[in-house]
Image (cartoon, rainbow, N blue to C red; front, side):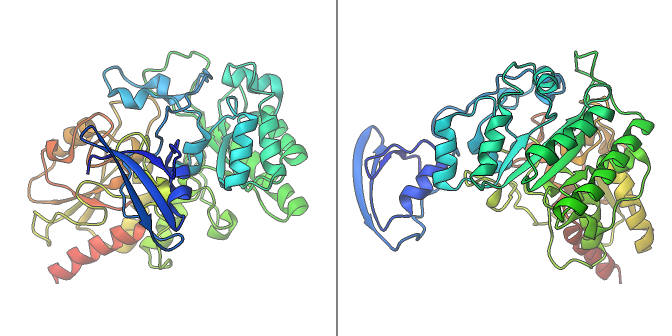
Length: 440
């Protein structure tokens, strides 16, 4: 514990990806620093056998930062005073592979392509936003925005699985521009595994007058465009390829698509089909949770070095219940405004008058921020302070990283004890069954 790894078989690994490839060998020579003294240990083991070393960081060198200045970037919309690590803008293909972070490819190089291909770093996640070069330049505020899409073409040519994303900004890349982008995808990037269309998030701290929230009619237009193109892609490619975020269906006041329309939920982490998977899990129609692998900014603090492929944990242990109130007590489920609109009908259909949804308005970020993953300790504490003592309060783990909220508060700072649950329908159903069985 606390040893500093220097080399593996004479090579200083740049990141956990290279480290894992090196330690998969059967004969390993480790050079490390222990208290200022260099030591060498030779190990013989089976090929691919675990070495038993816990690595604390995913990247051993510097994170490749982003040189774009997207007006919709949420990093620019953070309140002042937040911990410094949250303000780091990355555009690192390694974090895309490890954590599902989106990269614009504007800093991608030939050497990066060679490494991705030779080491099989797939899937990757690419922010597209627009396929027209001038519009992509404008959205990224980077003259390399349009030209850098050549790397997307190169990745696809080499058989790399790539998932794309379009953040739609009203009046900028929606409407006819969105139509042209999807046409560009069909013409030039049809091998994309999936493409998520998501609305921009606007906090009260945005300084971009061009950026604003969608109106209901604009959200409906986006849904219509996506569903029209799904039919086109299905006819021409045999799959729907493009999907609209759940938030769009809520904004448009439309029913969520049938679960089969999501084609296996390839972009679940990007808010595509979360409502449907949660419903299937909560009602017992799904035996395993799709779940959320990580919350917002989760790669920065407390994230496992192996990336989202590692089990998600919090300081209390993901999935463990801290049952301080009596188990027969009334239950309050803490969630954001969007989550409340999804959970409300499910709880009502379950016939549980002892369970209520506690909606947590996001005053910390403000604007149109309503997802559970961006709930912060201050807002939850404010809401809980007005709730009765002795009730059970359930909190999804997606808003936590190691028991720490985005605003730096911890679970122990809340005025009421809470039970941390994995953010999936199975975990919630089991927690409510526990309450019901004890009441009986």
